[in-house]
Each structure stands twice: as C-alpha cells, then as structure tokens.
Amino acid sequence: MNISPLDVRNQIFKKCFRGYDPEEVRYFLESLADSIEILLKEKDELEKEVVALREKIETFTSMETALRDAMLTAQRVHDEIKANAEQEAQNLIRRAELEAEQHLSEARRSLQAIEAARNEAISRTLALLAQLRSLFESQLTFLGSLEDEVRKESAVEGRGVRVCEGSQS
Image 1 (cartoon, one colour):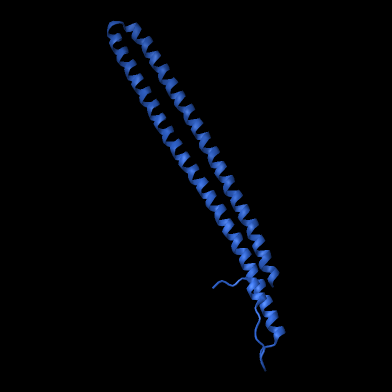
Image 2 (image 1 turned 30 degrees about the vertical axis):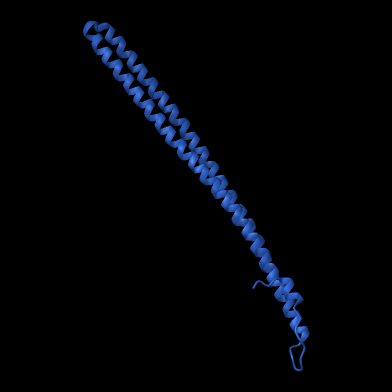
C-alpha cells in the first residue's frame, strides 16, 4: 500500500475518551507528510539522474566502439602500407639485382631510387603515425573533459541534495 503525503495529511482518527492528543497527532502527521514529500522529490531527482547517466553511458559506449573501429582501421591501413612498402622495396631490389648483373652503373642508380622510395615510405608511415597519435590524444582530451564535466555535474547535484538534507535539521 502506497501512502502519499496527501493521504497522511487527510487522515482523520476517531476521538475517544483518554485518546491521543489531536494536536500532537496532527503535528506528527504533518511532519510525516513533509518527510514523505521530500523523499519522493529526491527519488524523482535520482531517477532522472539515473536516466541521464544511462544516456551518457550509451554515448560513451558508442564512442568507445567508434574509437575501437578507428584503431582497427588505422592498424589495417598501417599494415597494408607497410606490406606494400616492403613489397615495393623487394620488387625494386630484385630488379636492381638483375640489372646489376647486366649494367653495374645502372644498378647503383636503381639502388639510390630504392632508398629514396623506402625513405618516402618511412616518411609516410611516420606522418600517418603522427596523425593517428594526434587523433588519439585529442580523443583522450575530449574524454577527459567529458569526465570532468560529469564529475562537476555530479558534485553540483550532490551539493543540492545536501542542502535539502541540511534544511530538515
């Protein structure tokens, strides 16, 4: 059976000889109704906070999934670039070796081209890694700021609840 503050306020007791003091009963019922009302308001606020926090958790979960997918994609791209660079380097080396047997002077020039291509591949790989690092750092900063915001909101709402509790005393 749920009793509302209004039920408590409207409760009427029969009067009898040597019964309870009606004023004392009325005062107690008013105090009880006030307490129930405060508790119901706090319950509603906490339920709203739970809903908001669940929504934030869903947001963070989707962000985590997106970041995980981005990391996997970046790893695949990195592996492909590395494999392509290695394959390209191996192909150039093979051609250079074959041409070296026929033309020693051309082999030296081909070797220089291979080193340039390798350096280019390394530069590209390093540039990609720097971009990925920047992306991850910005995402970590964003997550940190969201965490700070949640903590600030939690602290502010926590103070609001304490004020209500303090006003009862």
